[in-house]
Length: 72
Image 1: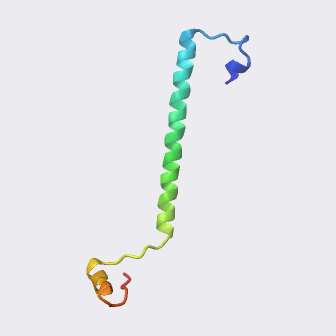
Image 2 (image 1 turned 45 degrees about the vertical axis):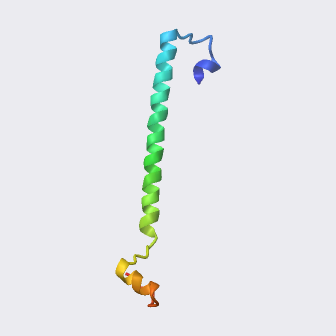
Image 3 (image 1 turned 135 degrees about the horizontal axis):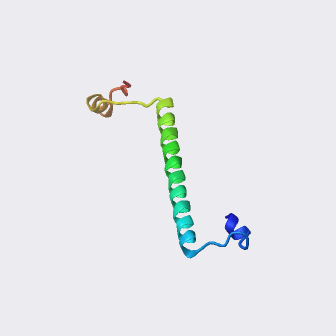
């Protein structure tokens, strides 16, 4: 942080340091939540862009007993 780089210019009290730590922690938490939201959005986009194969259970049983695999 800037304070550690130039400590003689801006001496902080103990309460100010505690407040700065609290603000930095809250900001980091906010950034992490935004990153998680972006990852969730990316995962959703990947899931919707890749077609999935859905097999109904009754038709799947037909496949297991020798029929061809049914795609829906």
